[in-house]
Length: 452
Image (cartoon, rainbow, N blue to C red; front, top):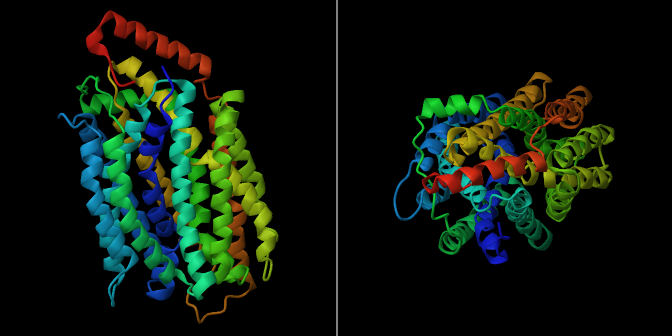
């Protein structure tokens, strides 16, 4: 298949920029803001985050099924992306800029609304990306371009409040949320509009007809998919333990809360710069071996955070660069490209393209990992006696508990994830065999053509 035009790749990737810009503060700043500024207990914040994610057990597979079965001349992916946009914008506004007197119920309602909007947008959007090409390496280029847009969005979420702190002395979680939320509300309709206008959906696909229960059964028997999603989920739990603790670590261990935005900027700059490297490495040694390298860098770099203490802010930089470099391949580029290959195996087995159903299962695993990771982080802080109230000075024992949870404990999850994906079977050669069988079937029965 011919290489995707750069302009098409650019316009398709644009939508991930405002999404990442808004979602980064949700997992980094929202927990501390609602706990410290609004006075909600850490246990309640952790419970809300867990409950919202568990609701995705219903919404994710439902969205995957609906998107795969959506008829109409506008495609089966674009209408859902369009419909979800205003819901996501309203949810971000209410969650980032809550009215006076907002409590745990406000957080729960708008976190739930945001989760539903994200499901409506990301599952069709990512499935759409998997259908743009059926080439093994071209898919890494697509997911790499989308990952770079996402990292740029997360980076923008650092640079905007960073500039406000540097130029105007404006800092703190509430300022970050207001600035990033406002910027996202401006950018999202522009970026989504360009994606919908300039990126085509595949014109020929067989509308999904396999019943949802049978489809889930086929998915369950797809061994490489189970292996990939389990490795991703376990590794992501480790990553999501660190994410809500990042600000606590910098503020309470290093004593540099106002400078946190600078370190986060370095992390995302490194992730952004590393994406082309991971795409290149996957071409040289294969996707799953490159993915293993990302796992191991994270696992062996993270424990060095345990050595840091009060006043060591800039000693954090080399560790942050290492973990940011690994993050460029770990979170989006490599696993999403591998997942598109797994969908081809399902297409061979089921006779139809059910990309959105697979992305719904993946989305649930991703959100479950975020939920479990955040719950471990919040309940772990509560278990070691840590108090998030700004007027409370935590002792050495509580601070060590925070340091251990942030630095060393996540590495156990990274190593387990690496062990699971160690013998992943879909290599470039195996994928070529799958594509050849699919093309042979399509040549024999043109009505069986899918969006591969």
